Length: 236
Image (cartoon, rainbow, N blue to C red; front, side, top):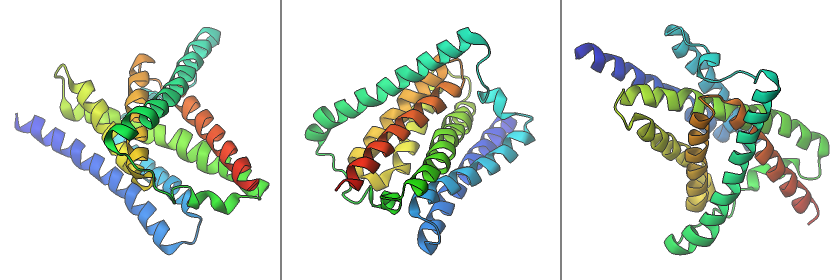
């Protein structure tokens, strides 16, 4: 019993450290303002991933063991891309429900300055493309899925143990954490991102703990969102 408690305590401390490194780095980057704020989150995420890699390696766990691998064969590619497309569809459904049901019902608010941090690339196509690759591709698409669905979700499952609802508890907890990570979007943004995290966690399990469908979905949706923002704001 003592060994189990000790093991779970270690897992909890590891998760806290990883999340602390991520959020602390973002806060420091935002304060010193040497780089655009939009990159701060990506830097924090990748430092968190480095720390998470160290903790996983101590237990002889590779990223491939928790889903970071490409599909093999045409059938797998089609299946995982299909799951990715369904995940994208879930984002649109969640956004619709939040805007037209949850927002008026609970008085959710969106932060008016939520998109200000992206203004640095408006009217600058080269800077915009670089941000799409680094900030969206590696930061959000790959980085967030590795850290949240790859590391954190599995870490939480291990913390909750082998009880029947352990995956359910892990899914809900990572969704709440992911929502708070986007608090700068206001209450509406937190609800949307939290529900998306819950949806993506479910799709991760549906895909038999493979991250590729989620990385694909996250990347494609964020790219589309940024492209629409870029051209709509640049035209103003």
